[in-house]
Image (tube, rainbow, N blue to C red; front, side):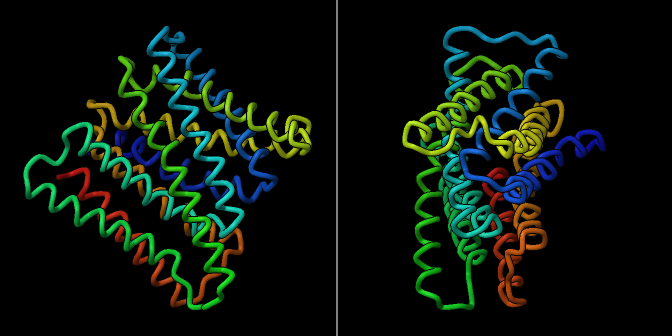
Length: 294
């Protein structure tokens, strides 16, 4: 693999790996986090489109690209809520597992991936490994009933959020655009959700996030997400790493996101919980590798 392609392919490791920890560290309500993150992503995408001479697509392509961004931002609101419930170090492996499951099943059902019985058996085993790996990352030595209920609630929220992440990945397949052309309209869709969510909460009686300083501090975290998204789109191009290798490299971000959440956010684990968490992360990464190489 060419060194430049490898460095670009590891961009998501940095961006998506640090994004949850930075967003959690800055704090605020989920509405502050999503509003600032989407604004930061939009600014990044706008500058990129301007420097590359890219214009907004039209009609059908514009609609599905914006829909893709709406899907991501809607799911990310749910993920931020899960962070508040159980911490990013527990929520990130679970949401990554759901995204891997969703992407794999969509590929099999709609795109004809995993042709042949052998491929389907290997793929099915990989999906089971993903589920086992995610279960290990949230295992706790403490048998507190309240914590278990909160964890179950967070997992159910994250499962529902997979619909949005699925739309983020699937909607661009209905367009004639490459990833870089879809980047700005995706960011527009994300920002629309951030603004709409802030206004909706205001109608319900909560403070307007647009006037809170912490919302704009989250522009910084949004830049990390945007950097990851763009480097992944470039990495997945055929003349770089390609879709399969680019996807595998991007999934390494779950390791950094989980470990930085533990180390820098005080989301403590016992030595035994830490060993089991690392084992779970390795299973998720191994299974992700299998699903894209079948």
